[in-house]
Length: 238
Image 1: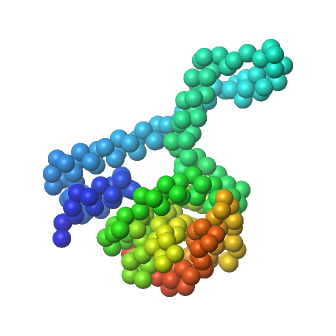
Image 2: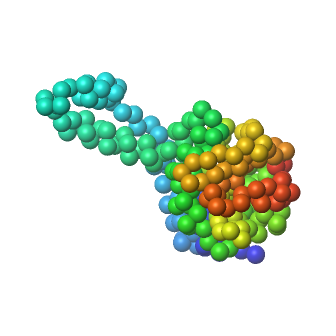
Image 3: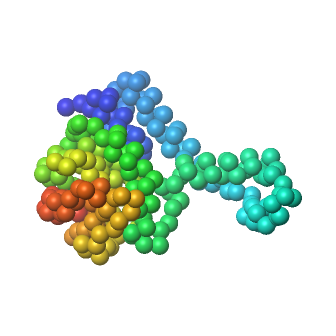
């Protein structure tokens, strides 16, 4: 069964470098598919170039100097410095996922969810094909049985403290819940992290770990058994 355009756009958007035979065949099937692939690659290249933008070497010293001036004599940031600062801040926001580091899993979970958790949950759709889910998880040496896959409404690659992972939004009878799968990160099993009216339950898996995140009124513990039984991790060539 050939891949339709909607499926192709979601797949290539999550993984612009995808070279699976089926993806390459779909890309060559029409100019529309080829154009979408090129757009995804161009955007990815912009992100990579943004990674190399550096602030002026003395930016921090200049900011400190400004902040230490008496209030009545304080000068506004020079135009060139302001422009440099805006470019740097804009680039930093754009490449958040490539550049952040965290001193603990707890700070990672809170920071990551605060960055785009609500926005990502709002984008979740009613249906994802098993193909879309399996392709992303396969890149992480994992797969999901139908018990979990049937609940996944959105999945994309995301950063973790130890490399690439998966950001999933799943349906529950209490509303959407977010799962961060961290293939190489170890956690304290059963630890609860609370932040910004949310809570996250850390779960150790056979390989790696996950954080199940929901509003404090949601019982995230209900997903632990499903996650352990349905998310198969540490697989090769799945």
